[in-house]
Image 1 (cartoon, helix red, strand yellow):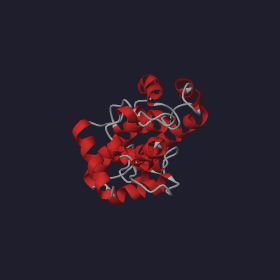
Image 2 (tube, one colour):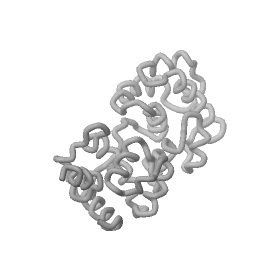
Image 3 (tube, helix red, strand yellow):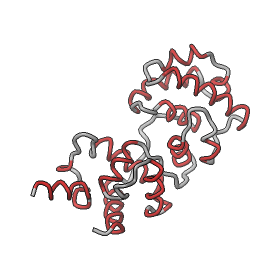
Length: 217
């Protein structure tokens, strides 16, 4: 199957079956989403959503977070992975937002990456979800699913290489939604250890599934 045909079939499937695709992190404004995404690094969205209500009640904006005490932040996020580092990042993030960005969430990926605890993946999430920019955040799910489906070359070894190759083939207007399609597909169907190929609607277009059939034959 040619790559352009695979992209076409996969995007048509997602568009038809998952017209609504969005983050599972719970938030009310861009600041809350930024905090939630920082906390979600190497942690489940479910766990983050358990922690953030109390955190957002105590620190509803960049100013209150900037003036917070480390121990107060730490106690509220202690059940999250790497709470020490993340507490420091959140306080630093609040201070930088106040001092350098007038308490507003930056729009550009470049400015977002200046914030403590914000790497390229997190910056791409914010740019995509908040500002609807054509940015693709490549987490473990997107990395795995893109390679298994055959959307990118198998020799793509880094998240950045996957991201850049996806940009070549995905229409710009579909990238923000495609980001969620790939994440959710990886989270619930194309599992890391045991993908649910037999119940996957993408199996007819999937390079991984085709190779598994060949091996069985």
